[in-house]
Image 1 (cartoon, one colour):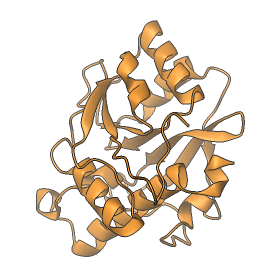
Image 2: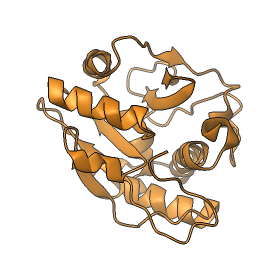
Image 3: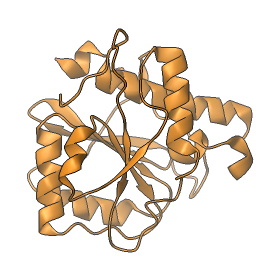
Image 4: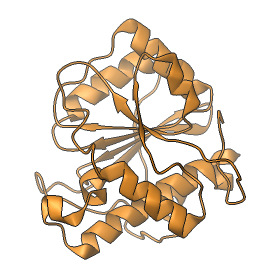
Length: 213
């Protein structure tokens, strides 16, 4: 792991929102989404993540400063060769990418991640996966936060040498659920459900023996 978090960590780390090209709205949940997740995780998991999210571009070498990057949006995403290679080096060196479909990125992100890992395919994570059984229990797997096309929520993963390097959450929209409830008129229940699932992701990536091992 590039940088590892632990419940006993004294140093504060940052996580970042990934900025990409192609015209899609990488900034869709810019204001309150990650900051709310960070605050919730620090309060409930004992993590020491900086309250301020950073923004990092796919092809920027500074991506290696962040153990966790988050990507979201609604539209087109495009990685050039240098960006795909940089993202691959980041992920194979210990970094982690969480992709959250805000609605509409599915055909684009799948094609672009094939540039990053042409030898890998997304594998659906079953409800029994440890990701859903961290501090918070999700017996049915990924929760449904927003309806969109009324499809079932699915979590997909890319594994490199036995490690989950990329989590793709589809038809759930966790990021919208992390935002202040007033933004999407979310119920408090859905807001908390989204935050708890997000905290599970943080815990799994940084604190769990399953991922570390």
